[in-house]
Amino acid sequence: MSCDEIVLQSPEYIRRLSPYVPGKPIEELAREHGLAEGDIVKLASNENPRGPSPKVREAIASAVAGVTRYPDGNGFALKTALAARYRVSIDQIVLGNGSNDVLELATQAFLRPGDHAVYAQHAFAVYPLATQARGATGIVVPARGLGHDLNAMLAAITPRTRIVFVANPNNPTGTWVAPAALREFIAGVPSEVLIVLDEAYNEYLERGQQADTAAWIAEHPNLLVSRTFSKAYGLAGLRVGFGLADASVADMLNRVRQPFNVNSIAQAAAIAALADTGYVEESARLNRSGLEQLMISLDALGVAFVPSHGNFLLVHVGDASTVYEKLLRQGVIVRPVANYGLPEHVRVTVGLAAENQRFLDALRAALGR
Ligand SMILES: Cc1ncc(COP(=O)(O)O)c(C=O)c1O
View 1 (cartoon, helix red, strand yellow):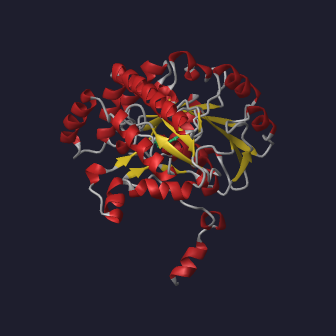
View 2 (view 1 turned 120 degrees about the horizontal axis):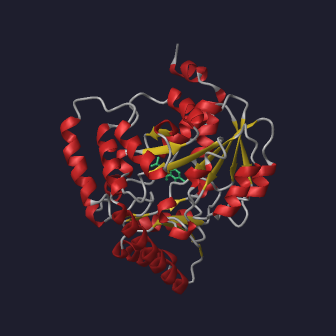
């Protein structure tokens, strides 16, 4: 059998997939443009510019001694900490290799070829990818003001719908739906449709904007809340996230989960990160001041942006692919978002004040202002 024949054995819905395009790694830009890695500013993947807290770094160092052994495949210690934090039972928790894994597990457990999954236009790119990888059909609901149109999403649900995805806040738009509207939406979703509420950026919301969504699960057993340690906790490279759901839903996801999907260092780091609440709050504060810095300077430059509830900003630059290249040449990596149907925007992650300034200076030069 030739390579071509083997490829043709792959289902048509797999051959149609376009792989996820991550932010450009610093090392790659350094290689391509002959730049020193230390001179490059990466604001492309919504990472915490402070990295993990000192306590978490210590936990990571201590956990190294245990890498000979397989991790706890049930993540007992981490689940115990999460259960206490979110007031759920251990059997309501699914650990993921990043929250991306939780999203994948949800589609694996609930979508058959031919089923429908509903999500919003400009919503996080993994929803269409995970849906298509199961041979299911994505129903894309047009955005309203770049954000989720929850009423239209409800109207798009049919007897073929098995999952509806909501990103709150959404990446890459930074848009957010207030808890009251979200609750009303959840109440309107038929009980046999799984609602995947992706709260990867929850920690960046103001206190008053954060809802206790885990508490909604008791009333809505079709709700899966997805969270991550990649963003405000500063652990993107370790890959750890989790889902909270009714025990019957968590059970289905755990059936298709790889036995050791979260490594031992990641589990130890996540436990320490969860306990260090002050660090996360400080990261959120720093993010707000970085957003402020970016918004004031972009206003001064006459550049439009979408007000954001995350740790990133969607910036209207016109010919985004040219601007992206011009920023790269100055050692600044942002994220092009044409694949999200936004060819005139780039997404910039909020960095440290000096990194934000590097972006602003490079953008001014790229736009010739
Ligand atoms: C909305 C949203 N959900 C989920 C993820 C997945 O992140 P991770 O797999 O690192 O938890 C991201 C990452 O960018 C995201 O933006």
